[in-house]
Image (cartoon, rainbow over all chains, first blue to last red; front, side, top):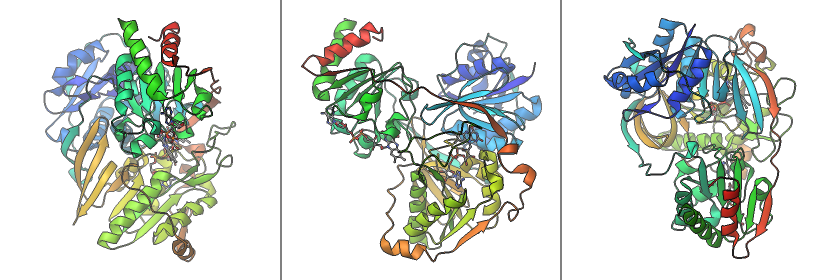
Length: 318
Length: 259
Ligand SMILES: Cc1cc2nc3c(=O)[nH]c(=O)nc-3n(C[C@H](O)[C@H](O)[C@H](O)COP(=O)(O)OP(=O)(O)OC[C@H]3O[C@@H](n4cnc5c(N)ncnc54)[C@H](O)[C@@H]3O)c2cc1C
Ligand SMILES: Cc1cc2nc3c(=O)[nH]c(=O)nc-3n(C[C@H](O)[C@H](O)[C@H](O)COP(=O)(O)OP(=O)(O)OC[C@H]3O[C@@H](n4cnc5c(N)ncnc54)[C@H](O)[C@@H]3O)c2cc1C
């Protein structure tokens, strides 16, 4: 069976949730091989979790430079691993970095790339959900090694546990073609789940009216154990930070429940949330387009409805 | 400093976008086509830098004949000249082919910096800037929300999942901007008139030395097998708030076992 390379997405000494999903996808195509890029010692520390998630081999691409440069260390490591294994496919997370690593790597390996797949089968045929979920497209790489970036939370099942044998991997980074990371600022995520991965998302729009008023949105999100999102109008008005924007040019979400508070439902907002399982909307305007796609719509003032809903949810939880 | 800004013509996000039934390729005739909003921010970033440091902004697009419209728009904003890579042979290109043609065109231009959008609103692969950097052998500094040039060094704030990083890079480099970078200026009447006499150079596949066997959808690195439209969502229940709607929503969610 051919090897399938998986670029390990890790942060602060732990696997990101998407990594086992990538290994599960890899196991459909061939023999999952994890590639860890990081400071010395990273692979050894992650190996037990990677073995559990199905990695037969764990390549350790480690050096001081590995964390210093943007994207190019991962590209170099995957190119080296590809030369060593002639893999059937290379899988990465469809994050900002993942899609760029895929792009640079595709050029280096003269291979085709499929971006933001929501599924992949045993023949490395990928499924994409495009135009905000308006179309489902199946596509396939026709030249070189298939390089596929996969959206978090979309692969079902898991790979059987495997050996997870750590093997050092030689790689070298071209410093002249690399940007240098000077400082990393991560905003504290708090207790709320990741927007892109949450099973409940409560979003506020321009109708929320101010940054202070967003506490109404947050309270409902917390009662439901969900993430907070915002429309672009709310972000542009300074009510909520940009990284929480849902839509065409923000995050695409597909939770079990999406609650839209004071959001009109512009086509670009819908492009980021219309594949949610259940949509609840609260809007003062009974003609707001958000109601066209809502499973349960309330024509009313969000400042009456949302706090009452928050209380009712809390009461049910006891 | 001379800057090349990449601009792409895309279907207007306000319209319903379609894929052709026959081959799953974007149907550009089914919608209005506009400059991708993110690329007008790229043009703005380029103009601000040349206003501060001197030099010229060249806008570059790959697309069919009518993509000249987006070049005129950028010229009307203040870009100095334009390059249009246009050839029927490019129809149906994937991201690898697009980046190869753009890199070949860049090889004919002089630049200290290349600016692109972080992610187009149609293909959304967010990979063309990185592919270009690889083809040109230079750094890429992508998803930038703030940008500064100090001599031959570029300093940027780059958006990442869950925060931002400070990044530096020598130039030339490929930069891609996010929608937080700036608000693009509107072309004024003078700009629109001036745009009419600004130079637009065109390059064909042959001009760029690209082999016929490498261009176009028939020989792309990835192919669409099939594309199916998703059934439209139906509207469900709608109630007027009579003072108990919050409780009703909770009941609805509970009956659907969602809480
Ligand atoms: C290229 C491009 C990309 C875009 N990308 C995105 C994107 O990623 N995400 C996004 O969201 N938008 C995006 N937009 C913007 C989009 O077109 C809309 O402008 C935006 O979604 C509107 O946000 P909104 O619904 O909060 O504001 P509005 O459209 O102003 O709606 C506010 C709503 O709140 C209601 N309201 C007011 N007060 C109350 C109250 N007290 N109680 C209940 N309801 C109330 C009003 O009736 C109204 O319907 C994009 C646009 C373009 C051109
Ligand atoms: C729905 C859909 C899905 C697709 N999926 C894939 C895929 O998985 N793999 C693949 O290889 N191709 C794919 N394509 C084809 C790909 O979109 C085109 O080749 C496209 O020209 C380049 O990719 P992008 O639009 O995703 O660019 P992105 O990388 O998202 O664009 C970033 C920036 O690059 C610049 N840029 C991009 N294209 C041009 C251009 N033609 N002229 C000037 N500047 C440009 C712009 O500044 C843009 O803002 C897809 C197309 C569609 C419509």
